[in-house]
View 1: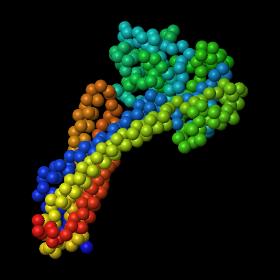
View 2: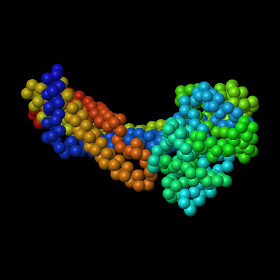
View 3: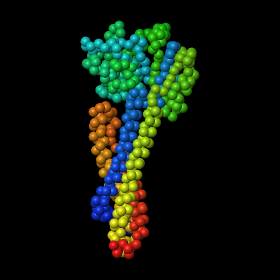
View 4: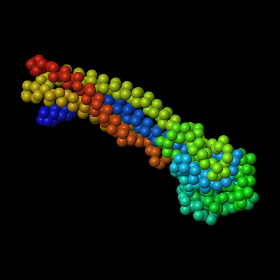
Length: 420
């Protein structure tokens, strides 16, 4: 059995080398079909990674909620943040707009229309931060004697020198700019900056209150100006609250202990899911299925081409196959020879298709990169799954296309074949 199998494989390779024109003709359809399939798999993989990265940068990672408190005052912010975790939050970050947005200046350049948001370092775990320069906040930055800030690329270009930056409303305050962030849909304005919540930035974010009465009056003033207390919270994607886009489940959990932080009316609480990971994945799935259908049709056409060439080949090689039988080759050996010849041709075509796809994607990635800024960790290339699918489908097509010609070869008369 094993000897017949090895003999069939040897005959298959010999037949492929002896009939180069037929091999090339058989390869053509498979190259197109496998190439289309590999491109579909690669495009689907790239689209999913790019869409996921875009969603994470512009709306948050999967299962991100935005939680706000309107109308009422949070009297104990630490207790409120503890209850955000208790309600299911894995990562919690302040996401607060100052009551009085400060101006920002560097040298003689003053920008008055910039938008500021007070955040915590954990926002980097909730959202994807595409840093163009510098780095994101760390816990060590909270000990800085000066407020620490990250600006978006438009604001960085507007103020110029980032080494001597000041912000303020009624007086100027030195700040440290440690990074420049790629602009996103979550930027609160064309010129946007994030201020790290720390003792040095409390006045910038919350105002200059020190007593409980002053804090309460500032909160009431923030409400009057339409500035709610806002947090970004990321929960477990498997949490039932993640399936509630309006955040009612999470709000109910959070509101059960609202007395701890001074909120009596639960209607003052609001939460909703801010990311759109599910919609993105659903759209990519439908698009991938449609493209896979087109590729499957193309691959089936290639299969029929190989099958047709195989049938013609068997008809032309009846004398050759009959000679092998007369010299002692078993029926199984001939069956393996015909099938393996088809598989070998298809695998060669698959390798050629993968090489061609690699060249196309390399050029396409360079062209796309000149129009769209791609993240460094999301290259346009063939994923390992694309290589496996390409070679696997090529081998399967060759196997299916070789069975019928092999059965016909076995049914041919040895005597009739030798007389030709």
